[in-house]
Image (tube, rainbow, N blue to C red):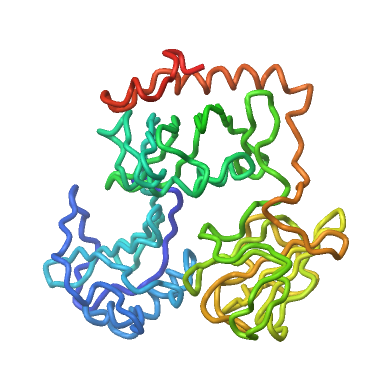
Length: 410
């Protein structure tokens, strides 16, 4: 553990506890009890009371905890660990605030000290290949599989789809024999869980096309991806606000299942479970966020160049989404539902340009800027280093010939 802060908090020691006892070199944690874990609907005080702390002790403990987190915001399943003295009274308590930080309370004489510790991690690089047989989610994998779980790749598919959203539709355009090669940097906790990860380089081979992505870090810490020439891979708008299948296309004549008549369907419907987060497809300003007849709960955003987007049939509108509020691309504006004229949970998404509905899947979207000319030389050096990481990633041996990939990857 790495201690990042420490403070002395005056918390009375439990009755009968010996004062000034020296801390041993090692700590023996008491076997966990069911009552050491915060259950749904229970307060933190219930956990502390079960370990023998009185009302004054519990009050002092929760006041000290507020320096790190509001005790009322602790989630069910939060576990506390206790080290006990010879009388059975807690002399040390540990509480995990989140997967990356732990706050520890240590009794010293008549008071307790509190300190925040960061869970250590190691940074590694893994290189993985994927060979498509039916779809990318079930692709056959190669590369560093001794350190990379198949389920981890499945979690990355939506991230890959987002990087290349303007170049290839991963749900419809991939064919058997297409391949993906990627290098990934990860921060891994001692228990093997992933703290964070990001792509270092990606190559997609789709129907004879070769698509590559190189990340560049932005001032706010986000990663933006560029092709080999330094052109942005991201449009100013995301192609889809939820990563689920299309259930109804944009058309001038569609039979409405509720109204029982034909009329234009001037948007795209995405079938998704109720409660699925809906992302703003571009940065903009909220024009309206309300219940509006057949749309049900709707959020409408105003963007540059006379563009507006609508997100309808929501089950709820996200906190802070109100007229005049600014939203960022990818920010959650609401959740999928079936409000208004809807037969089941789905998102109805519209794209309007100068007041005219356009097909979000085919309209020519504004793009984001390319690498500045003054940075191109530096970018090309970074690009070459990044692509070198994926040049010799192996496919499963029996598929190496089928990929038709040159030995150097380029």
